[in-house]
Image (tube, rainbow, N blue to C red; front, side, top):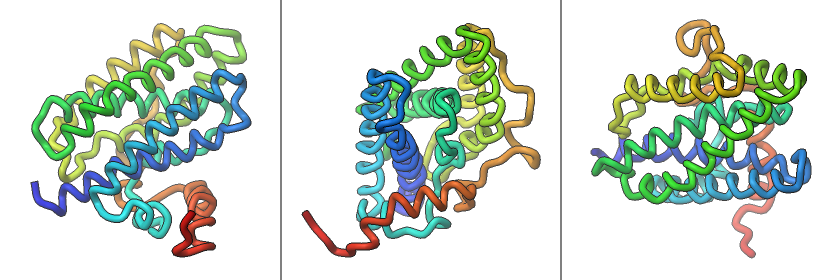
Length: 239
């Protein structure tokens, strides 16, 4: 693997983890129950740890996190979506953590650049996936209101899922097989939650997702400004 493709892949995976970590961190002080406050914070910290390893392999982690412009980030548009209500956060987490767990399992089984990271991270990502699945079941098979909100969240975020299976230079995985495994897994969870896979397109002209090419949604710019504000306001500062 060339240094260029390895850097491209590290930035893509690192940006995914960094951005989702920040989104989950926004729940601090706002989660529906105290236990969930702790759970979401732990998941955010796990993702931040992954981001630090990945971004450090591509350059200076602080510069990459805090000094890049919006178009330089290559994260999936899915992970930058606003938290919305709690059901939206869980749907986003279900879609992404299932993908990340399946991806890391495959990377850990290989001998590529990211095998070591994936082998260490796959256990914590399995917890992220289980957490999302359990909440999907509780909301989908709960009250009429929670069911309706979970269904709406799954449908609203579905159009962002196809981007996860676009090839990334430096990631040696069968994206078609990954997509098939992902759909089967998500379908199983949703059916157990008395929900179904959304019917809309997840890729193509009517879908969304160009984050890998540096194109992001409006909400990402506001999130990035908040995330980078302190570092840009005090360049070179240290504790």
